[in-house]
Length: 145
Image (cartoon, rainbow, N blue to C red; front, side):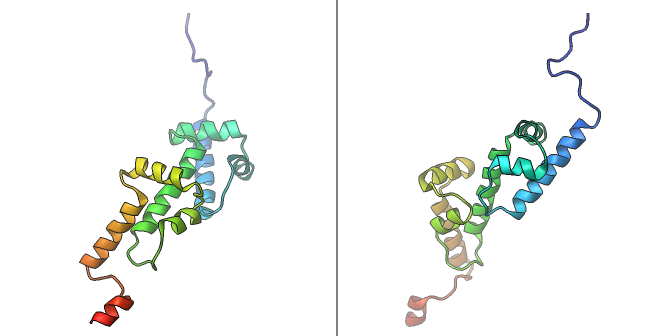
C-alpha cells in the first residue's frame, strides 16, 4: 500500500502558476512600495484568494506576503538611509515615507534585520560622506573657511 502526501498530488504547472502569481504581486508591490496595502487588496489585484497567495509566497519565497512586504520596505528604508547623495534626512521621515508609523517597533524590527539601529545606519552614512569629502557644505562650514 502506497502512502501519499496529505496535500495530495500537485497539478502540473502549479509551481509555475505560483511563481507567476508571486512575480505579479512583487511587481505591483515594488511599484507601490510607499503605499500602505493590505494583503486582501493585493489578493484582489493578483486575482487569488488570501490562502492561495499565502501558499504561493511560502512555496516560492518561504515567507508570507506580509513578511515579504515588510522586508522590502525595510530594504528601501536602509537604501534611503545609506544614500550619501540624498538631501538631509531623518530616520523618522524615511520610516514614515515607507509606511512605518510605530517607530519603536520599526527600530526594533530594523535592528533585528540589519544588526544596527536605523540611526546607526544614518550616522555611518554621514561618517562615510565626511571621510570621502562628499558632505555638502553647511552654514558652519562656510563661516569657518
